[in-house]
Image 1 (cartoon, helix red, strand yellow):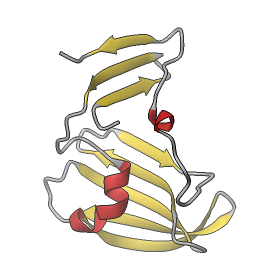
Image 2 (cartoon, helix red, strand yellow; image 1 turned 90 degrees about the vertical axis):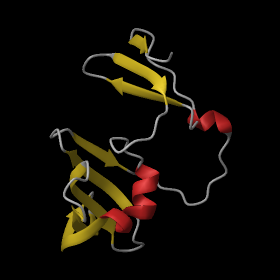
Image 3 (cartoon, helix red, strand yellow; image 1 turned 120 degrees about the vertical axis):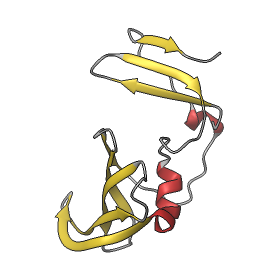
Length: 129
């Protein structure tokens, strides 16, 4: 919702709740997908099959050495140029993988779509002031 972040770690069954504070360590998939050329350049492109379909696999390199996210690989479907997977590794060697499936372009979306309800047995740690 642009105001609160919820980070759920299934292996620990824990949810961290905090105020949204953008900084260089914040990763926004939306911002990345629409603005990656500002901060990254394509290092290599390879034709691969991913999830049974032809894709381009792009390895990206940051334009600045001190960029927080250092290693990025994305998979783009050849048929429509939509990104279906993104692997990101930061300076702390933390790796995140985003997979996108059942992609629907320009769907009607209600505000309830952007709510998160933690599992009933999860430990919720609220870090908001």
